[in-house]
Length: 202
Image (cartoon, rainbow, N blue to C red):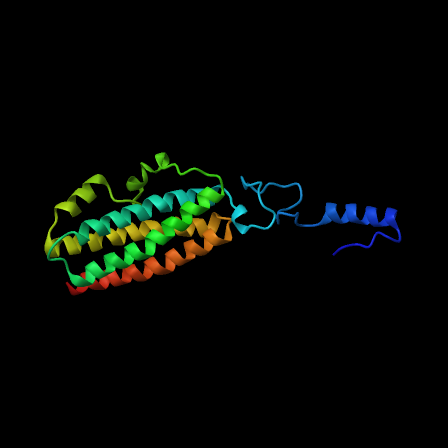
């Protein structure tokens, strides 16, 4: 609300100061004088400027995670004798996850956070990523064996993504990043069920 100060400038000025001191949000949408853990100090109105450490960690980790899913899909699609339904799923995964990589990369750029994958080396030990041995096994597998192994590995891979996304929903701040995390949970939960059905029918 804009106060009229023309009639009583002194009172109007005092009221404005008091309102500024008591208001719950500042121009950037944050509590006046409080940080809330957000490293951003940009843009009054751009929602991309509203982020915290959890948002940055989510974007960096999920970019690397998605990149491996695309790599796994590419490995499968280069093989002969692969189950057509599994190959179609691999294409679907690529089509879904590359745009998400592009989106998250743009967020990091908007947030002034350079991509740093050095902290992702241990993700495979947490069940989040496939190990080098896992990837080598997929590369050496052929035909129906490759199809089944891809499904088994991608189920585990998706479960890791869902864990990461659930953490983002609980701890993140950026509304767009939270919305993407919720989409990943929904999409990849459905794909896990699809992959289990394919395994059961093979």
